[in-house]
Image (cartoon, rainbow, N blue to C red):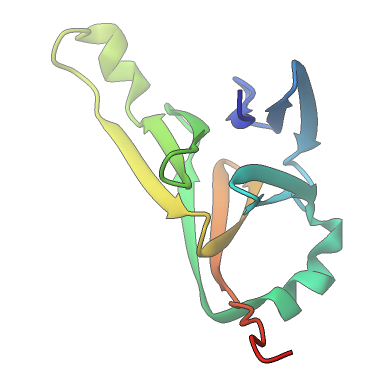
Length: 141
């Protein structure tokens, strides 16, 4: 079975679930960096972000997902190499009108091409994505 990721219900911790272990990453400080290695999702603490600059290229895309009256989680689709941020963005309407109320939202990140940083910033989840530098092997050596 492949590993995956998820958020705690208070959205302060990201868990890498691997080989029957749940490895926590605190999102309230610098957060975590998510990518892939060999088709598996990987997570490191953002304290290593100074070395990240040499691994990415181009402009970063930054999104904030509001936490008030919302519930967000993340998951990894191994088949497509995509991380999704999925959320119910109007929890109050689900309570008052459970059949037709509320709104779900999702954003996908291609982890085969991108590195993603996620952290809890006040009343929001901040997600930044950057394009990976591609390494081209020299076939003549």
